[in-house]
Image 1 (cartoon, helix red, strand yellow):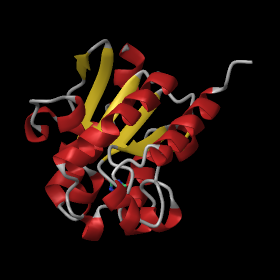
Image 2 (cartoon, rainbow, N blue to C red; image 1 turned 135 degrees about the vertical axis):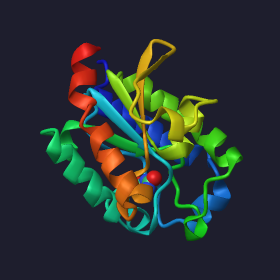
Image 3 (cartoon, protein in one colour; image 1 turned 90 degrees about the horizontal axis):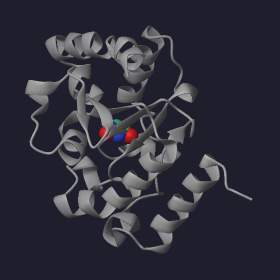
Image 4 (tube, rainbow, N blue to C red; image 1 turned 180 degrees about the vertical axis):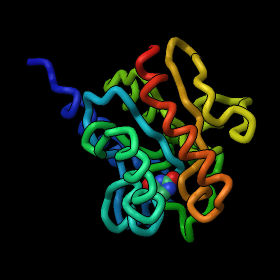
Length: 188
Ligand code: URA
């Protein structure tokens, strides 16, 4: 019997553990933060790496940035269950330091498999790390809010909600960019 998308995602999650991906990060983290939401989603959002709250709960974007994200999703009539959300790096980096290039590379094949299983219409990259990994060469400050097509997939690079949370100008820019999602989806 063919496996459901969720079962296929579960297999990838197990594989990360079996492969001992980034053992130094794994040793310091509470748990793997693989991803959450609908395996059948039209939209996949990709952040940087889990923070403290995510590490404790095992779910991406459950802290202050996640709350802000939930508000923006509500603004466009969506709930967390309607989308799929994950990060490039799936263990919390110590003290929330930036993920290292090697760590991003180590997790990239798994992220690509997650995307290949879900087959979303739109991938939203949140912040410079996920934009850099999925749309190399593009600067978030220059391309935020502009849909980009690469390898037959549509991407929307956005500022990271944690960066925008306490910065008035960036916050409004992110809200305005986020509000474009329904129209972008409709046009795909
Ligand atoms: N920031 C991220 O990039 N990802 C999370 O899961 C939480 C905060």
